[in-house]
Length: 96
Length: 490
Image (cartoon, rainbow over all chains, first blue to last red; front, side):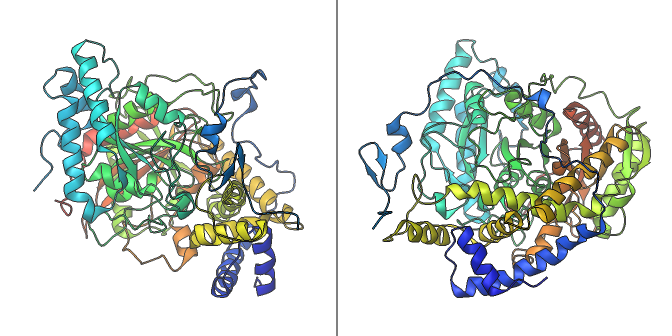
């Protein structure tokens, strides 16, 4: 199935990727080829098959008690911030 | 020039020499650091070497040894880590420009346990960006080469880990395996690589790619080395909800029990002409060797094998598109200058991600988008169930399943990088093990009769039965002799 350039742009917007025009064109071709390949699954009748939504039996991974435990300090959490103000991450203005 | 002593030793041998005090950890660490300095300009296995903290850890180990307090087999042993494990205070990039300069404020649980065992961590290893790739060519920081032939790739995504162990730069390494990323480079570089059962090793502090598939595992020169490394990190971690409470056995126990009585399943679907002749010859010889050692070969069927790659390339990109949403320039990593928040997201991500990461984010976003979720992601999860059921049925008749790891030996740099689908098909034999959440291992099965490059045999086992995989692999290793050192790197 061929993915159009408009479709590629729509997905890029959803994925918060600002692609350059040559990237859009290349991805349209590559994604179409990959989607053609995964059409192979159309051969399979999966009606009545449960999806494998967990890779481990739930008995293997019981919940722990919901207790407050020490985590990163705000200084540690902010140590890689590209921009900060006080104990906050700073980002460009959202509301004009 | 070949690797000088003590680099000629396996991890197990070094560990014994350290306890006999024939060599100190500082001597071993200095030898490792000189070896890396002498060879890594050509190999490219390391993204970063940390000599000072390594020597400090080595001297601390020697001091423990002198006081009689060094009890772990890894105490004083120089190791290295794929750059996907967070290391407190040491830059961690996962091979991506979008994490350039990121200094984690904490250690991954695996790192914590290795430090606790006294291991000497000498640096961070090259990898495909976010562990996406089968050749290490998707690293944002330059390729890694195969120590057997510097014009070829080491495989991927844990290419640096396999290359460093094969080139005798370190005594062992850790990688991660989402669709074959430990086993395939281990096969292509002639070392032992083990992907444990999903949930066997904590993933806390490991940069996430596809969370229902990712698993941490060791790469070693010998089967015993891999067993020792796994034992040091396996087990429940309260900080990882997907880590299992299943008890951890002593992986060295029963390692020398041999292959007598083992039932080895040979899946018809893995021997249908998709493998290069020289590789298939070594795989068939390995199976014959098992038979000669008293194992029984059993024909089994994995009828959904042919759907594995298609299911995987829906599940993994879908999960990746979600996991990689966090790289947005807000909390860490470089930020593109922009006037609005949405421009900042878009431009940071376009500049920060490489071509393969973008391809997978796009594919995954599409597969999860409105109207497509059921046709793609849900369908692929149902196919996972079928793949797992195939293995469950096979394990009613056998103890391990055996076949090739990779359809070819190491391929040339540049050979597949422009054809994503061809690169994905390199994972055809390794992917089903991840989809089924089972343990899998690659053990050297000799060299290709034509070009002398390494061939790995894959063994897949029942959930949490790493011990049987290791025992079978050890039997083959004893029969074939240890894998030789590659000569190309000198």
